[in-house]
Image 1 (cartoon, rainbow, N blue to C red):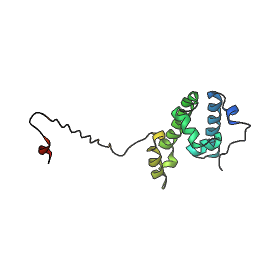
Image 2 (spheres, rainbow, N blue to C red):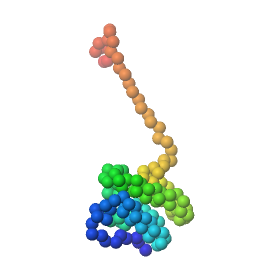
Image 3 (cartoon, helix red, strand yellow):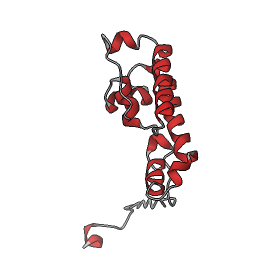
Amino acid sequence: MAVTAKKSASKSQEYATADALKAKCESYFSQCDEDEVLYGEAGLALYLNVTIKTLRRWYDGERHEDFQDTVQMAFMRIQNQIETDPRYQEKGMVTRGIFLNKQPRFGGYQDKVEARQDISVNVNMGKGMDESDFK
């Protein structure tokens, strides 16, 4: 069974405060638990009746800075489920769990540390040098 949002008059009225948003997020998680559905970014966005872009802006604090902590906590709850729920250990789900944990908002884990190779070159032209030295 899919988790869906109930229609509301207006998103701005529905989430007038961070507490209102938090209550709606809690409702999403409760509904998922009741329906035995895994949490997800898209599911959360659909339940909140916003786009993933809006949800990510809230996460990054670009819009409604007061929503940032609430949304980051919601993403941490999704991440926790990815890391601990036994369903992610079942055949076919392990790869999905690994992929999700590599996403920036779900931990941003890396298989290996990328080595930086910065090279800087300094050229000093001093006395006794002219253009013929560079031909």
